[in-house]
Image (cartoon, rainbow, N blue to C red; front, side, top):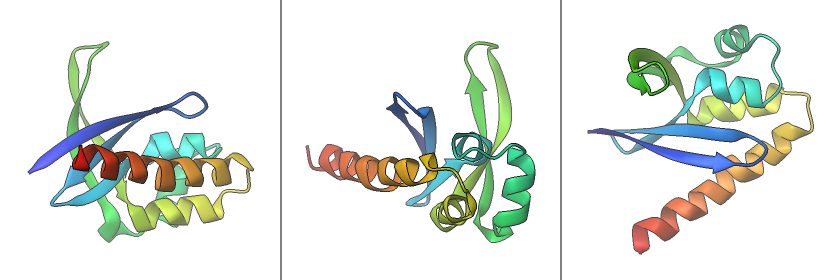
Length: 110
């Protein structure tokens, strides 16, 4: 079963995380933009392994339209973080991999 969960951050905006078969996937293009890549599509293509990429239909509420969106696995997320040269990559790593993980654990226990 697939589900999505929205996480918000004042610096990074909203990220819709996909949970697929118990694994988390992150919105590829959105993450690459947050990490400062000037060409997010190329960054994902160059740095992410194909077996950690999945597509999922999401609804864009502003346009009332369904689109296929590319999501990447957590290992691919790490690859993008490591390759980014901007200081915000470390801040994103802290938020995306530590704070949201804590929130998920806390929410699951509540």
